[in-house]
Amino acid sequence: MTKGLTTPKQLSRPVPGAVSAAIARDLLRLVEAFGDDPQALMQRAGLTHLAPSLLASGKAGRPLLHDDFTRLYAHCTWALDDHAARQEGREPLTKAGLDMLCHCIITCRTLGDAIGRTDQFSALIGPRLARLVLKREDGIALLAMPTLRRVRNACAYLSDLTGLSTYHRLFGWLIGEDIPLLGAAMRYPPLLDERTISYLMPCPVRHGAPENSLRFAASYLDRPVIRNSFELEHLLEHFPFDLELAQSKDTPLSERISHLFSTMLASGETPATATRLAHQFGMSTATLKRRLSAEGTSLARIKANARMALACQLLADPRLSVTEVGRRTRFSDTGAFRRAFHQWVGQSPSEWRHSRGG
Image (spheres, rainbow, N blue to C red):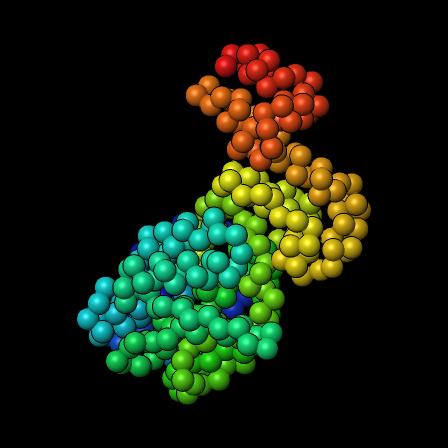
């Protein structure tokens, strides 16, 4: 799917688990079948120490450490996606292009919004990235990735399968939840070993379908995007070839809502109501309030803290008047903002600004 990812040194990190040598060999066989030298590829990947066991015939081969497989998978996919792009007469998607997509969608409000913006980005850069078509029906979301490929061989298959896998993991990471797939479909016959397909896409895959697609519960489309740009920078060090990179985020509900409120206020939106938040997080309003209470807070307190943090940030800019700061923090008038700010910090906005040299 992508080309020009991070260097082997950047990909290397301690991770649990191991990957079958049979899967690594399946990828290397594919690389060789399309004209690349597996030995040279492993050298580029910094994996020459594994070449004797993976390239020798008749040996079972030891399982690969996960970081080694991540590196191998990346380089195999670069080589095969490059070939798939050349046979279509186009340029392949680069790592820089994928990173830019991620930066474009990190500010979206919901998963549904992120999918829509992903398709808009795809339309801008043309055939290097497949378009997305999203449909909701009877509580099920069908996310199709139509292929315009004229040649549908094994390297194109791997590129498209990696694309589906990448979207699934990226979208789950954005909302901080693993999205259980109800199924995946490919517009190809099965052109890789069954073990390889199952590892790259760990759910039933239907082949010979009208389009490449994923199916999952439509309720996930309303989930809020809870990740931030700092977390994105960390993700992009290893994405998209670290298949065990955690999607779910073990973060208190109060912190997720705090991040969401801060983002909405900063962009001029009124923070969401309890009803809307409960719908987005897939729970009842009573459960949402009960969980926040168990965490020692409430929606009113989270909203107040988000307003206070934004007000302090804006007051640090001497170009903004107190009235403008009150407007941007969603107060009905300047008097209400002054009273609230004094309750928060024990000073008026002007006094607070002056005490900090503003």
